[in-house]
Image 1: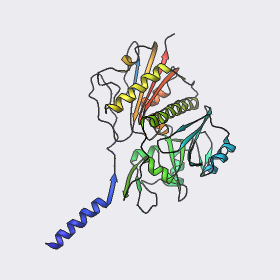
Image 2: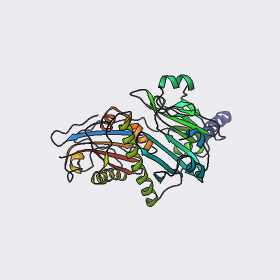
Image 3: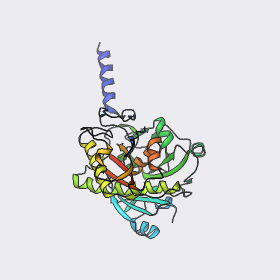
Image 4: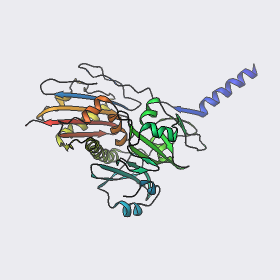
Length: 352
């Protein structure tokens, strides 16, 4: 009897020593009039909405490898002054270079040194990986793994879902750095890479994580801090959206302040009222929210729980309905609103 009790106690101890953070499976809701609001998603999700005023339609420089850990002074000497800087949720400051829509590069600087970089410039080689390379080629070269250990004493380990493996596998650069590979799943080619120091990657937690001990978390932001982060992410979403459109030989979109206000209000409403839908809890949809704007055609993309703007935009790119909105040739303007980890894009073709 004592032996049985001892075994039970050991089992209980092991259960509490090892902790597993595993979000609910990713789901996507079809949107229709009168849909019940869904609960706040625990894993990144997106939805898309398209409509017109006549018939609403509802549808589903230097090679950056040289900048790992370099000083901000050295980064400035290599790339010049950024177009703008913006804080992040994870303690580093983005230096964004998007003056050329065909080239989108951004570097995260913390305590005077580069701790992450996102590169979307076509044909550029980063750590032996060329932007635009095929998934098949890179999978054969790097042998993507479903389990990715960070090599710490706490046993931090990421577990990638089949969707993660297809859209954003991760590879090791060395003992301190990793690289996420963002693929366009429609063309099966690499659209961007994110180099990131492992301690920052652990703060971001872009995948399910298994660990022993304490899981590090970002320093909580107050509302003023979040406003600065949100404003930066809205700029990044605009730049990435126009970069993707230019890569597909489409015109860039102009920012519409009225539509941006509408988009932000919807993101805030979803966050504060714990739902995720194109329809507000009072039943208002995109048409009602845009009632003070004259337009000929409009569409909406929403997303939640992505770690930042880069992740959210690539999530939209890899979903058929969202991709169609991103790449709709007739759109001329866009409104963008971010509230913490809720993201909204409102696309417009203005009335003539």
